[in-house]
Image (cartoon, rainbow, N blue to C red):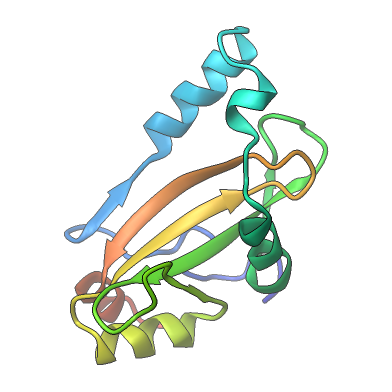
Length: 138
């Protein structure tokens, strides 16, 4: 997927009912880091598996990492729900999200932003299968 192309992971995720934004919590953590209340060790803690998934399935964004300010962030989408692995399933394309949402009406989708440079990661958004089905593919 191209940088800036419409996708669930790059900002055109479902809106309205069935979604939760975590931007305020994210911004609070970033502010606390810049004020010296948190160290990089506190917040740059992405596990190797998350970094691997970001490298292989992540959607590049135009956003610079708010911590190291050197790399662009990558968004990774995970699905959790009945019939899926306990650790969730990483998804790489919008069609996978919509297909899974149609097959599994109880699935929940989580978008995590990841910096492959400093290992920053934060939950950006969660949305339900119903919200994913309402969003047409671009």
